[in-house]
Image (cartoon, rainbow, N blue to C red; front, side):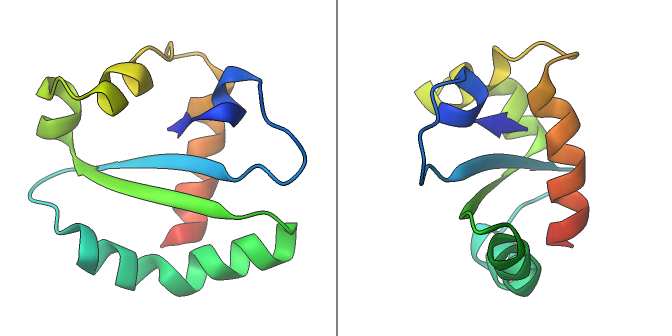
Length: 93
C-alpha cells in the first residue's frame, strides 16, 4: 500500500515512494528487506526514484495502533495507493 507524501498528494521532486507490504504469517523485516533488496534497487534505478518498503504481518497491519499503521489504513480500498502497491509488490519479489 502506498503511504506518505505520494499517497497524500504532497510529493515534491525528489520525494521517495513509501510502500507498506502486508504479508501473511510471521514477518522478519530484516529478511524481507534482504530478499527484496535487488528488486527494489532495480525498480528505483529504472524510475529514478527511491522506493522504501516497510514489511508487516497482516495481523499487525489490522490490529496495531501505531501512528504509521493507523494512517496507512485510512486509504480506501479503491485508492490509487492500493493499485500502485500491486505493481511495487511484484517488482520487490
